[in-house]
Image (cartoon, rainbow, N blue to C red):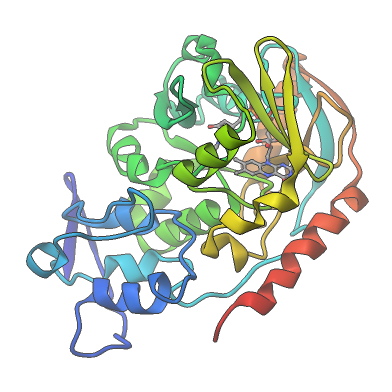
Length: 344
Ligand SMILES: Cc1cc2nc3c(=O)[nH]c(=O)nc-3n(C[C@H](O)[C@H](O)[C@H](O)COP(=O)(O)OP(=O)(O)OC[C@H]3O[C@@H](n4cnc5c(N)ncnc54)[C@H](O)[C@@H]3O)c2cc1C
């Protein structure tokens, strides 16, 4: 069956249905959404030819009886339709601490530095960033010029789900040189599925940066929780999870701090079965743990990422230091245990 995205076409090898009489979306719903495996990575929404899949909260396809073309693309790219949990540090060539001299970010702004440097090298012409509005609702930006990064809310971590993957379809359609995507481990796994299944994405996605991640949250649930804890969103400038604490910092330097364990009651079910802390399938993974404050830990895995780091070093765009892989051990182990939560 041929499925179209813009002007590009590809052949979809239709996968076996587990529920033979049902549409593929119904198979996805029964196998991944209803069983609480869904991570809300939205790879399915990226590839759905009728753009029917949405995620106001959980993933749904409101009008699937009428609109689903039963092409099977959603189940082909879903990283949890046949779930093979990943874990550990993954393969890497370099494990370093970095701090950009040009940008400010959540930690050492190395994610931003990697994307902008890749742009300067001509590897990509577009990077997808998660920004936010005043109420911390996530918004996706197509960064095409480093000057756009003067918007201060583009860097930094938002601990709520962001609909990056649906925007990837647009970015891949319009790119001339290539696209970079930044995402949590589940999103990285989805992007790899897209590349594996469709040359359209394989040819256009040139850089995949993964973020270390213990968990993410639904916007409504997290904001309700934080408001109850006294966070004033009109003054909120930074959220951070560090050393087992969630810290919300306001403009007047006032902090609301509590044990991240307290958020277990709103832990999304898809995170509860996720075992990948370091985004092992990325080209480079970046996180906070493993480096001194103000630095990002950068795990360089693939040749493209290595070339960007060499470029950054040559240009003197960042300061580099030692990072400690052993410091990731606790969180890697913590996530590995979640394999036990997968209902088979
Ligand atoms: C949900 C979540 C949980 C995390 N948990 C941990 C953890 O437990 N331990 C740890 O060491 N590190 C964790 N990180 C990573 C850490 O918070 C920083 O993102 C990382 O260190 C990079 O910092 P930086 O200064 O280099 O990035 P910056 O240069 O500031 O860039 C930040 C990048 O993150 C992207 N981003 C922000 N929010 C989201 C989002 N919700 N979804 C997808 N992309 C997003 C932005 O688009 C931007 O590209 C987590 C990140 C996220 C998004």
